[in-house]
Image 1 (tube, protein in one colour):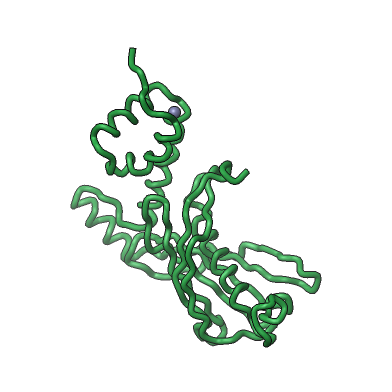
Image 2: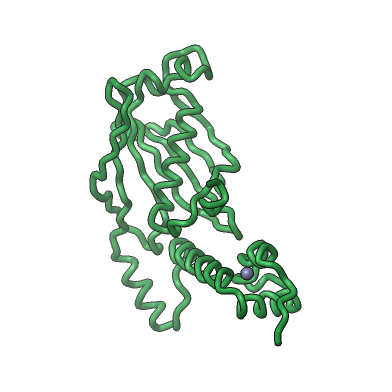
Length: 230
Ligand SMILES: [Zn+2]
């Protein structure tokens, strides 16, 4: 009879590295033995692999035999990349209305990146005065950061399993230009890097009418199981 010498907690801790082939042979063997006897950890393994697969697909041209790969790349040159597009506005009562508006299509030669693009209208409750972060009635930086984080979540919406979400762990944002109440702000987040659990996004906020760049920066989020915060 095989005795499992590693706990579920230890398996979960090393599972991401295990899927990436980054654990020692000895640890890999213990995990393998454990997976053979534990349906719960096998289910987590399946989840981990599917997440890695979709994130990898979102970031890279898939590995494929060279002739097929050339054909795929040639096809991608002509592929229009769809970005999901969501309109977020606030009415006078402060209610947030979210409405899927369609797709913005651009011509791209890369595989489709995971990207989220959201539009907001600057309201009186979004100003630096209202947020307590400044003394002028223009869009406050804390609200802008929150909008960037929402765009990151939108970028991942179709890529993470329902059991997972992400939490923000690092923000590096330059707020370059002011936005007055009533103006429209379009925020885009593009997934540019993935680690074991870390996801890095390039974010940009523009005034869509004038194409003025209001802010740009880089945000990092970490994948977590929703149940861990239940
Ligand atoms: Zn287990």
